[in-house]
Length: 313
Image (cartoon, rainbow, N blue to C red):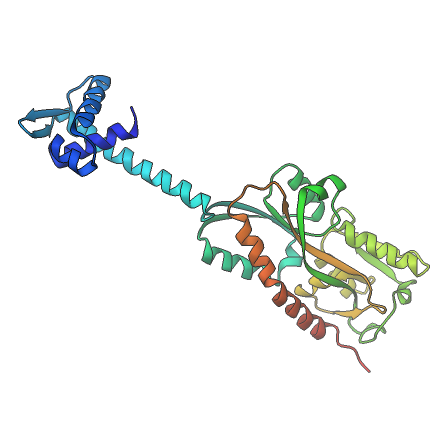
């Protein structure tokens, strides 16, 4: 039994005759008659009562007719869904993201995306950069907003585009002698450090150690924490200083001041990455929106940086 058989059957039932169905479908009457005879033989029931040029449904034919209408409607819906999916209008997109780093722009990107493609289901997975690497390797996410570098093998398998290059800032307690000043990283050589754990932020961790070593000292790490909020709580309590990426300015940090380092050389890249072999039809629109948003992201970053890192003359 083919869908073609069902469509012929419905046409005869609705047109109440084979000749009329032939004209409606633009198919020869013998072809329709032969097809419906085969259908009746396959079902083992009589579908029509024929009287002259008129064909009326038998009781069992009426039952089959109602079910056939539902079947054809579902078939049409399935074809429409497949065509919409091919056009990238429906589907599922799994997104890995570093929460703090995306506060300033991800909500706007998501809002625009859902306005353009309301039929796409977005799956959000808040993940650290190392967790995203694992998720990419296991095919668990379609796209990630994260920090490089990636493992060599994975790096070859991903498209990577930079969203923003963030400076590193020094967080000190409000009222600290450094507050409101420009400073050099060697000024921190005797200060206790509060630092994000390496398995949470390996790029930032390694950068801090490298910057300190370039200036001839090793940081005195007092606390290793797994969240920037914890670092700021400790900084505000006078337990040390923290070097953090600019995106952490999005967090509430009572009792904490932020300072720019001099020279201001290091940048923590935030990137969008997705597999080179991705077959997702709903992915390109999200990538395009991220790229379109980059200028506004940069403007937003300049504004919050200027506000948070005021210096005194």
